[in-house]
Structures are given as C-alpha cells and as structure tokens.
Image 1 (spheres, rainbow, N blue to C red):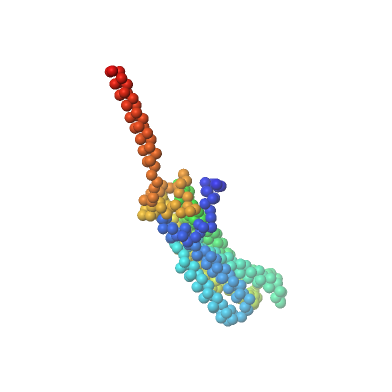
Image 2 (image 1 turned 135 degrees about the horizontal axis):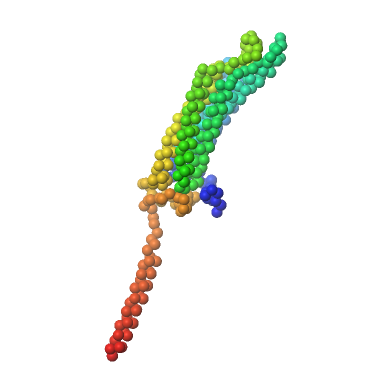
Length: 336
C-alpha cells in the first residue's frame, strides 16, 4: 500500500469514474458535484471553436466567411449547450472555464499576429515609411491575461477537489485545509467577477490603435489585414469570450456556495447523507475504515461481537460451579 501525503494510492482506479460509483446515492450532494460526461464535451466544443477560426482564417472573402462558417457555429453552439445540459452544479465552473480561457487565448494570439503583420507590412509599402507601424492593444492583452489566469485557478482548485471526491470520498481533511480551500474559492470567485467586468468593458468600449504612420497608411494596412478588426466588439470571438466568461463566473460562484454547504455538512455529519446510512460506503474501492475518516452513522448491517463475551461468561460460571461443588464435598467429609 503506497501512501503519499496520507492518500492511499491503491484506492485510485478507473472504476471510480464509472456512473455507478460517481452517482452513488449514499453521499451528500455527490450528484451535484460530479459529472462524467461534460469534461470531454467541453474540450470538444472548445477545440471546435479553434478549428472554426482556423478554417475561417483561410477564407479571404468576408461574405464567404460568414456563409461558410454559419453551420460550424451552429454546431459549436449545440456542443456547448449539450455540455451544459449534461453538467451538474459543482463542476460546471471547472468545465465552463475552458471556453472563455480558450477563446481569450485564441483572440490574444490573433491580435498578436495582426500586430506583427501590420508592423512588417508597413516597412514594405511605397513610399517607404520612416517608422514601422505599431498596433497598441494593451487593454485587450490585460483582459485576456486576467481571464486566462483566473480560469487556470478555477481548474486547479475545483479540479483537485473533483479527484479527491472521486478516489477518497470518505476522507476527513484538517480544519486548516477546509478553511484555506474556502478562502481560495472566494478569492478566485472575486477574481473571475473582476475579470468578467474588465473584459466586458474592454470588448464593449475599446479598440486597437495604429501609431507610427500617417492615417492613410494605417487605413491601407487595416484594409490588407482586416481580421481581426481593431474594434474589439466587431469580432464575434470576442463577444463569445465575454459571454462564456460570465457563464463561468456564475457557475464558479454557485460552486463556491456549494463547497461551503458541503464542508459544513461534512464537519457535522460526515460525507454521507443522514438517510442512506453506511451501507453504500462498502462499495469496492471506497475506504471507510481509515483513521482520518469522518464519523459515519447509519443503519447498515452489523456483525455481532457479543458471542465471545458470552462464551467467556459461561466458562467462568462453569468454573465457579465446580469450585462450589468441591467446597460442599469437603464440608460433608469433615462433618463425617
């Protein structure tokens, strides 16, 4: 048995991800915290978003871009809402953060390419420009970085708690860990909210600016490199980024509340529900007898431990009877 930081690694198995184990009825709020379908769907929809943009980037005509990508976007929306439909509350935050994170990363990459292309093209124009063009997009960079960082924090906190619940559902954690996890959840939720507000303001009101060249040259450069547009709200990917970020923030806030409710219940009653009892904790792969486990109450089957005590009592009673008989025989012989 291999132990790392008090975790029994022998309890880790692929069977723990099965539907029967993950959605067992004996655990408090387990169904609300688990989902075995949403994660791959979320990755697929995020990957599909990137593939759509890569496909569109190869199409020079704007009208063809709109017509050709319409069906792909509908498919993306279908994948996204299917992933939400198969989700449960606890891990929606861990899953939906992938969408704004991927979208912000891709948007940041595209605007960086725009900046490099405009700068390089400005040196090739005739008449020659004495200074290269520079695309200022610092506000978008700040919003994208904050989105990516806090989405990674969400994945770290709620993703780790997800695996702890899968493999060690009965483990009782120290008070300092539970409190630290709650504080981090609150900080991350606040950061997600701030990132959503900042990103909304940047996308809705800001735009990139071209400096270093005259207005005519800047207009000519932007006609060559029209995608992504310098007005952030004119690009559908940026709108999707903001919308998905707000969905991720709402789900993160709800998951944080659920985390506090679960922590209070576990501290008072243990990880199991009060009505189901301990009978559901005897499934294969779920340890219930370690020292760090929370106390568990229930009405499950029990093994009697009174028979050895009864046997010992009967043996002592027999010895006392024999001693009394011998004493009586000795008294009779003495009187004769």
